[in-house]
Amino acid sequence: MSTFSDASGVVAPLPKIRRPTGFSGVVPALAFVGIFFVVPVAILLLRSVLEPVPGLGNYAQLIGSSTYLKIFANTFIVSGLVTVISLAIGFPVAWALAIMPGRLTSVIFAILLLSMWTNLLARTYAWMVLLQRTGLINKMLMGMGLIDQPLALVNNLTGVTIGMTYIMLPFIILPLYGVIKKIDPSTLQAAALCGANRWQCLTRVLLPLAMPGMAAGALMVFVMSLGYFVTPSLLGGTANMMLAELIAQFVQSLVNWGMGGAAALVLLVVTLSLYAVQLRFFGNQNPGGR
Amino acid sequence: MLLNFDRLGWWKYILLGITLLTAAFLLLPIVFIAALSFGSSQWLIFPPPGWTFQWYGELFADPRWLESALTSFKIAVIVTILSVLLGLVTSFGLVRGSFMFRDALKALFLTPMILPVVVLAVALYAFFLRIGLGGTLTGFVISHLVLALPFSILSISSALEGFDKSIEDAAVLCGATPLEAKIRVTLPAISHGLFSAAVFSFLTSWDEVVVAIFMSSPTLQTLPVKVWATLRQDLTPVVAAASTLLILLTIILMALVAVVRKVLKQ
Image (cartoon, rainbow over all chains, first blue to last red; front, side):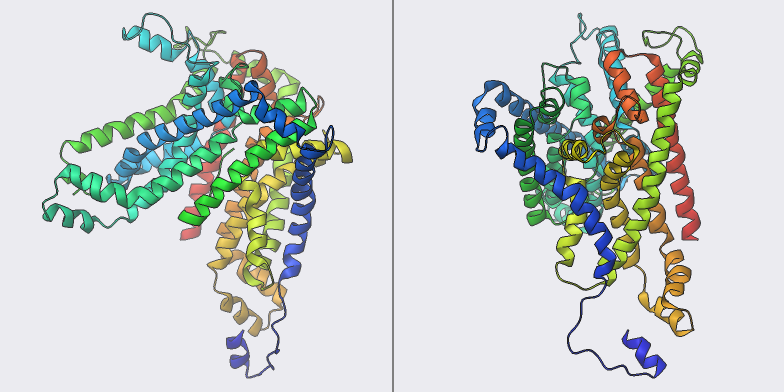
């Protein structure tokens, strides 16, 4: 604005107090998000302490039942496994992408983005078919003579872990790629000059330098996995429920809004506190996915 | 040396191997489903005994599939328009404005992105039951807009932050009204942000399934809900055909984004 008044030769008196500007622009979005996001979520959470009777009865029931505890355990075990496997596969891939020659890199990036943007249901359906007893994976394993009997790969937590890892891989590879790309190669040259062998360069220089990115990516994958609904319910079968399904079941089949709200609050608190950790230690990164 | 591909020695073959296997792993289900949609086996045997268009025939013959695809498209288009407009106005406020709690508000607008979708789905379901929007087109649009708006605000805000406001001021100086300057100078300059906002919003709505499961009614459902409901009954190849069409649309949109990015860069 100062250039404007200087150039025009008009010197407008500056207001003594800076009045708020631009607020009217955010009013529509604020109203929208307030009515259709904040209020509904708040009502849901309130119902967890108000229905059927006011108090913390729903939470006591949630913690006191072995069925529900098993669902919490399922959720955390699967999310943890998915995180560890994604990290183990994702790190070498991100590393290779950061240093590989151009043409192949762009092909693999295209595949990454394609799988990320391909409809979630289409991908999950593919895994339902691939992993079934007579599916391609079992046939291949038996053809190679690795197994005699088809493995139970679907309708259990194995299936959920495979399907979820598949979905989360791009979400860990892309941020890791960014982190490794930013590492100055001369730090590794310096380590080599000082006599470090390849293994020492990896464990004492490259991995520590990539660690913040790995931690941030892992946290993101873990949090996203905790709240996943579609893949666990299609690949997990009814006996291996996860938290998101439990919430849906309380609400849809049992019409128990108190318990549904309580389970939702548990998921929400865990999710938001892990994000708070992420923001505090690793800064802002864009999450995504369902 | 670890960051120089040619000097990795035999390590580079390990890295290359893992990368190619991962790429194959990521591509496998997509290619597999596309192949099966043309396979003649009802039981999804691979490799299929023969090739056929039968499942596409069944897909297009069933008015419910077509209807749900049209519903999805209609909702996605309305959501895209509203999301870009609302995102644009909001971004101007957030980027150019100065008022209390600006950063807190921005964080609030982006929260639907990190919230587990199932929580939002259940909350909106209860809310809409009470105010009579359950199972309506309006209900669908509102709930998808809640999810799409953060992507729109992010894309447009970052484009607006990268735009030098003095160019807009110069236009005003040359006689344009402030609104004219915004429309004829600023909007074209941030068009790449508007375009990403539109594509993200469209795909968010088009692919959305969790919220849609709760919003749908027997008479009104989107394509992903139809796929979901069919999958719960059996693994028919008709779903493979529907999925392949969904994948095809994604590829077309991605190609479009790549082309538009190239054109805008020139």
